[in-house]
Image 1 (cartoon, rainbow, N blue to C red):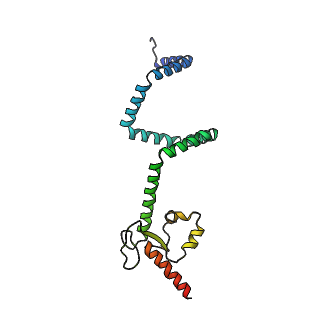
Image 2 (spheres, rainbow, N blue to C red; image 1 turned 45 degrees about the vertical axis):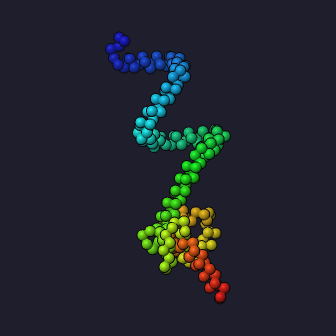
Image 3 (cartoon, rainbow, N blue to C red; image 1 turned 60 degrees about the vertical axis):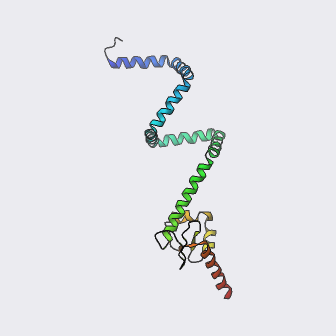
Length: 196
């Protein structure tokens, strides 16, 4: 090239790039259209081979630039609400089954943890004397003070009892009963109040 110093070479390259920026963009667009299929295939192969490294790199980038990315995302959502709603809807229906299955696994895992915490044994089981039911589908959480109805009314969403228990660090006043003994306990309570 005839340059003695690397700095001069770099300066010349920057100047050339700035002067021919639009021309180079047009050339790249034409080249990409001509080689689109092979380029996408190569990108796919690379992504499959380096999946974990790409995830780590993306995560590091996100953590480094989190605030800027979040601001840009928020701006985009405010600018294009219809696009975002459409994309969310499409994503929901595309991944509906896997999302529902994942949510069920998470709920089951939480239920197991709560039942295990309040069980008398090292596996979730009914606390009623002589009952050996340990089927998770049959086991429920029972309020030992018979104040379940009042507690559910006080909660914002009564369907999230297990979530509430975990969030409040497993408070006392609960036990594990099977569905039969939970009903039996309620019937006995009603009989006692009727007699009085």
